[in-house]
Image 1 (cartoon, rainbow, N blue to C red):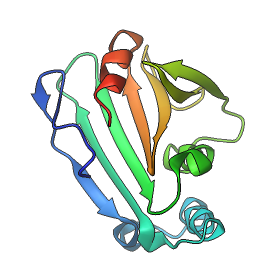
Image 2 (image 1 turned 90 degrees about the vertical axis):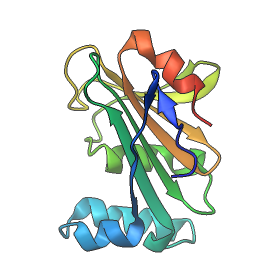
Image 3 (image 1 turned 120 degrees about the horizontal axis):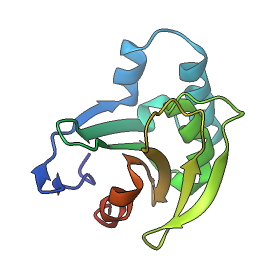
Image 4 (image 1 turned 90 degrees about the horizontal axis):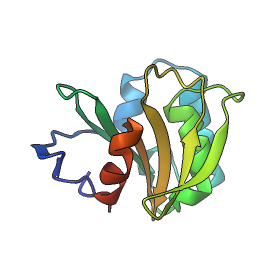
Length: 148
């Protein structure tokens, strides 16, 4: 959570964060949770090494949302596709397209991700943090530029 920008679009962000153990405690047993445990194990860590945080500008039109996910000790680029599919709960048929956004490597989550309107989702690796940005194209670059 310390990596979250303090503010976005001149609005101070309120961040909600959960440890992997809190995610497991609050989750219903299901495939996504089990797959997350498997992804962690495949990289030599446990669900206790997982953390997730989110913040959104809900009262702003258009909406902007940020989410970060971390498997401590694992480069985000190594697990980005897996985390994208699990966290965003998207099917294997949804296209993940590599792109460059604000000079950073990113993956654009294709149609079928459950979003409506002009908003798009990008997954952006940064060290051990996988950032997920939901924004309309006009806001995207400015949002990505403030990410660590």
